[in-house]
Each structure stands twice: as C-alpha cells, then as structure tokens.
Length: 249
Picture 1: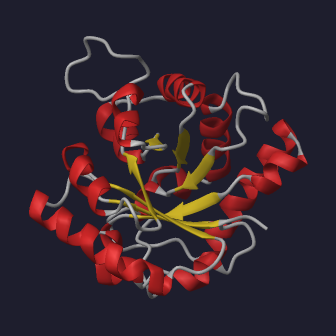
Picture 2: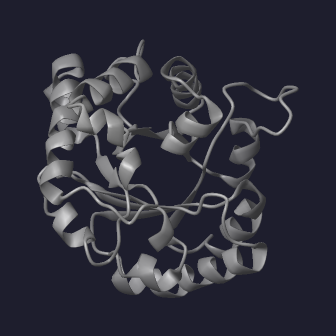
Picture 3: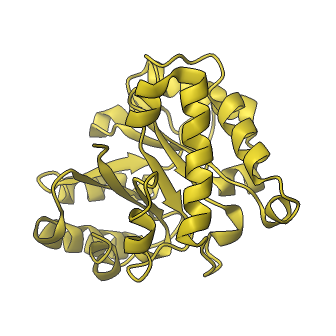
C-alpha cells in the first residue's frame, strides 16, 4: 500500500514571524491528526528554512526546499544547491513546479538535469507536471503530461527512481480556486501511472506516489484522496495556516 503524502508549498509567502508561528502550530498539532502510513512535508521559503527546521526538529513533519540548481557549490548567484540544504538535513526538493516552468522558463531538459543531480546526491525529488487551461481545452492533457514525464525522467531507470514522488498540478487550478473534479484528477493520475508501468515496469508504477495539486482544501481533500491513483496532495494556500493544513489529515 502506497504511503499518503500531504505536502505544503509555502511559495514566496509569509514573513519570518508568520513562518515560525505556522511551524509552531504544526509542531503542536500534527501528532493529534497524522494517520498511520501518512507523511507530512512543508516547503518554506529558503530564508525561513533554518528557523522552520529548528522548530520542527522533533515533530513528524519533514522540511524540503522549493528549488535547487543542478550544481555543487559554484558561482550561481541567487541559487541554492544540495550541499547547502544538506547542512539542514533536508531531503525533499520540489522540481518542475508550474510557476517555475511558466514564469522562470524552466523546460523539460533543464528539469531533467535537476532530477538527475538530485537523485545522484541522494535527495528525494517531488517532480511536478501539469497542463494549462488552453492545453486542456484543446484536448491535449494526456499528451502534455506524457511529454513532461518522458522528457523529465529521460535517462533514469527504475532503480534510480525508487524514491521519486510525482505530482500532477493542473496549471489552471493553482491559486485560482478552481479544482479538478476527483474524476478528472484520477483520469490524469491513471494516465501517468500507466506511462510509468509501460516505461519502467509494474513494480515502480505501483510504488511511486502521485500527488494532486491545485486548490486543495479541507473541504475537497477527502474526495480527491478517495481516488485509486491519488496518493496525496501538494497544497499551496491551505498549507499556509496551521488550522487548514492540519485539517487536511
């Protein structure tokens, strides 16, 4: 049985005081709501990682980073690397979030380099894929998802992908209040899992968690998680208040 994962992406939100208060709320409340076989992860702003990791050090909440550059320590101004995040014992790395694809020009080739580098360094990537509204309305959802997965995972075999987490986040549902119906989300998750099976075999396809992201809230999370191929959620706005994040479990 695959583990359920609820991951909170705080994006470029919250000041330090707010981030600390949020982490404290999770520290104090998570043990009361966390079911068996379920993992909680948060992705704070880079600037808040030291404070958040300190607060959550004894809590069942893992901390990850929203982005890395695929290089060891080097002259890449404004970027972060895995050697630096390992100082804080971080394992999880978001790769391919739609906002980085859309606004920062990260394409499948560059994201593939990030995935290779991340896995080589022993980190756990949360690899995001998703279609725009125009692509969905044109009937291209499956082809877009398949292309992003195929090109993003190029050159990686099943053995290297055993720790990887996949996240489907339709761009049209992120921060818009719109959400894919459970049936729509399940359809795409099934497409992704079928592709994983065709490419890497049944064992990896059955083991790899696939999360849904896009306006997930306490009111819709249960219906989404009730689908056969949805193994968790990558949450934005609802993860930025401890009450709503805890209510997702």
